[in-house]
Image 1 (cartoon, rainbow, N blue to C red):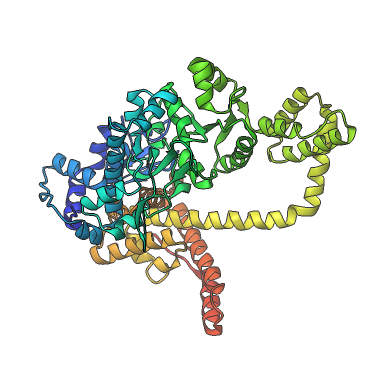
Image 2 (cartoon, rainbow, N blue to C red):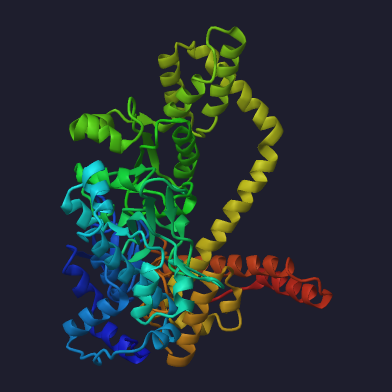
Length: 586
């Protein structure tokens, strides 16, 4: 069912966000804003803010943010229509009765919604096939060989695709879905010679997003056949690099960290053993998108990749990605077993808990892997190892942290501390001589870009908090001066809103973004502030500096994207005029 924008806005306005959120989170008022412990990540001091004026929430810790719909969708794992209906009932607004509409009409209205519907229907079908008494292949594998309980099988919605390679296709066609939709879903292959299922004769693992919506599948072949594991292709609803298997459950765990495994069965085995914070990447290498996703829910990640060569390489690839995202990483030792599933079956949950307590610091794990590459009885290889470690230690920019790790490495590998420190200092000097200038330029450029982004966020927040600035900035700053798709779209919506209504409604703007990720990012644009009270003169000075920075960067950006002499001269004129720019707050 699809609802008008006016109805959506009426329901949002009738549900004060402070009232709604306080039903889930204990809030304490501080000035005009309410604060509490964030329900979306573990924290000890409140960084979760709710603004009655903006009708938005934002967490300064994990970046979660949005309006009242976003909150309910993320907290309760609801779809937008479900959140709308719940808030409508709360506010006493009667929604139109949902009418039966054909798959063709649904496809025209919302392609993604239909794809989600198809996947939900398919998950039910596979689950039914698993319970089918006529073919116990899937059940015997999961309950017998893998020792999964009926409760675990139900919890993860596991299923089975039968031996007939057109069975699912025929079932979904009977439900009214067209060939065009089924092909787009990735569940069916349609060729000139006919149609057949992507998954058949496999135990099935539904892949769910953080809102527990089925977005894809993984299938493990029964008996002989290649590939052993087969995943859904990427579609409009399934992006492997931005989803993790089991995260919909792990994000609700009371444990303070998240365990990353290599496969579906490892995740399920750990959950069954009580480790409900386990997740796995979806048949692809760990990415920055995965790390960003994890950072919403934890600050520490435990790696349990397979103990073979491929697993060690996967861990070594993941560690720098996690560090880059600001996450602490440790490695759990699986030996003498290959993976968590084997470990749990042989040594049990209590022993695995001990291994978590003994998890190896990620840097020391990297050193240990490097150590095994060299023959320490050979003086040349031993020297090479020392040099490699010295280079690795340069990855710690803070001297205190670097020295702590240096001492730990020397203690463990019996390396003279003075000698290793000398090597580190020598390499540091060489790097300073050779690379510092290019790196400084690169860092300055990165810092400059982040400074501009911060200025743009600050300006958007000020415009919301003080609408008189729109008139003061008219002819000086407009939405076209914001760079980057997200920033420019938010600025355009905000300026257009003020132009038409002479007021701003940031919570309504959030609803213009389709995905939770976009809503979260948009919310951050309207929740940037200087963390101290300013006098009028200080704010005036800050406003002028912010406007000049945003406009100056736009000039550089515009100049770099044109070769027309007249345009370049105009841009140069605008940039020179910034020297005399002064905006008064009086």
